[in-house]
Image (tube, rainbow, N blue to C red):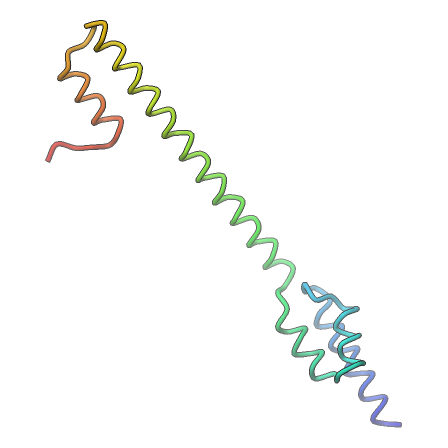
Length: 111
């Protein structure tokens, strides 16, 4: 009888460990009851913490936002070069001025 009580208490401990984790308390308790409390505790500890998953998702979202922002800035640079090309075609600026401005926009330095 003592073994069953220890098994049940171990399952409750596994559920408590998994409460704030991806596995969840219910699944940890179920795994502990079916297999063993030790397996349930190991599964609970191997599961990611909910706050870690949220942080990971925020970082991915921020990274995607920065990539999209960078992509849109490149389009803006290309459009600006087209505008200077139109000024060159209209002979408003010289080809030297156009090349200089294009290098500035593209971040190319004359070394």
